[in-house]
Image 1 (tube, rainbow, N blue to C red):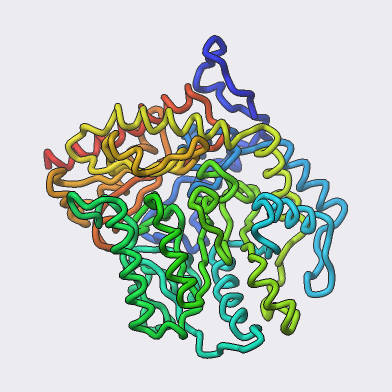
Image 2: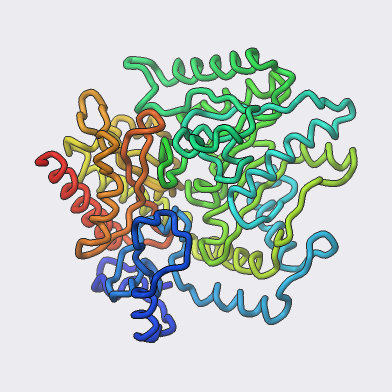
Length: 512
């Protein structure tokens, strides 16, 4: 990646974050964009744009347009695209060892990655389990939580339930979706989802904190609700409470970039401890440095029993995710059967682990979390200066480089307790009426239209659209989550292009 630029080293936008990339033949580009696709795309009524190259902060489409990737996909590209060091690490691993089955063997890259991950928790977590997607990681975490109670000296087989939060999204497999509170994604699969999870109110101050209610009172109310849910379903039947330290912002995700308030997770952990349940923190999107510390829970004054990790772990170079388990859980397994009754064919794949290991070494050696924290502060300030007064911007929220539009006032900044090392995506919630927080009708597709306008405009920009922030079905928001090595000049480019797309669509909607 290009080094950070001082003010006297400003470069033209087309030169920013360039890395060498193999040329894609023109005839191949033309064929890719014209051929009838055999891919089962997410939307069969739309022809997706084709990305043929990626370098640094930019995606190149088949028609040669270059798009600012302001979200790193889904908050994935932590170090930007095309880093030669990661390419070299992948090539070297494949040359040495392409695959071995984890049922029988381990390998140096998986051992080194697991050690790095455990060390990054300052010894608070004991073991790492590596898979290929966040949904798989959540499934594994759920199974481990269940098995923990069977491995205790006095087993508790009656513990089969989970409690999560309304609007949450923990993955798309049946197990992970069954835990989730995402109404839209659950809807058509509801009849085949497990019925052993209940949901409580999310820690969303914009939607759920009462006027004139203090943060302490808000936390106490949510803790009491969780305690009452334990009592309702039977305290001795619950395996774990599952939550994201900062809610992510997947496509159609209900909440999007919602940080917890001070004291929230400490209060939730106390309720879990009271009833003997585990705390599972889902850091698939907000973890691995994106919130300004290696793990988001390190800013919350709690330690989870199990945490999931994902997107920033491999930064998009390989499909990788996993979970970390604390000593309490591992001690039970060690003192019991000594086995985790779970496994996958490509678990801890040598090449995948080698790539993620190199990504994490780059993040650490270049101080990218600290840079992201600094740039996150600038991104927050510039977005609020640009959009906070817009009549259709309801809230701008997040931490660091994990933000969305749904604007908090500057007075709320302290309530969000931004760490000096804060690197979250930023999310912007759009509303039809700012005073009442009334969302746009879903038929207007405001968030998706902003995304599409961003791709069309010059300069083009990729922002991540989502819906459901009002009630799980309606409520538009867009996400901004640039890589940790972004420069101040690139922050300004992102804010300008995001402002342009939002204003253009909102003006069109209001004048229709």
